[in-house]
Length: 131
Image 1 (tube, rainbow, N blue to C red):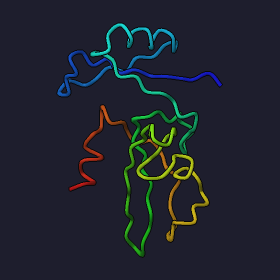
Image 2 (image 1 turned 90 degrees about the vertical axis):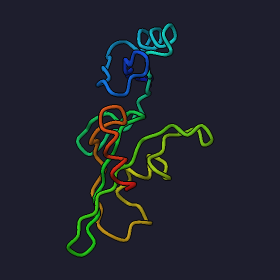
Image 3 (image 1 turned 135 degrees about the horizontal axis):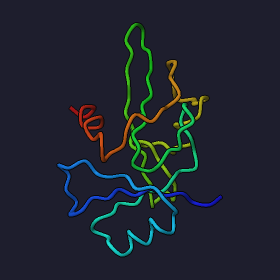
Image 4 (image 1 turned 180 degrees about the vertical axis):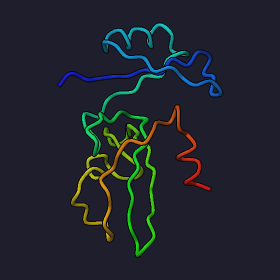
């Protein structure tokens, strides 16, 4: 499998401006990021897809919902590369466990995770969850 990357062009790491997503060949993206490390944030594809068939990249935010009685609870989880485990995680679980429909830890019916945003364009999804 050829690794896939995406990059965010963020000159001067300005957070108030909407970052620009760059698409193209992996070699071009990595070359730009190498030449201008302060302007590009590079994220790798996990090789996995969400419930809608969209490729999941590190930095994506996944949503999954559980119904407890009549209440529907939605969790937002950021996809991260964990160097200590050499793998992709969402929250405290390995990504493959988050995407598994047969998770023994789940006591309530849960929806299959889907991408609802990313940390660059939708950081409020994660912030609201911690309030």
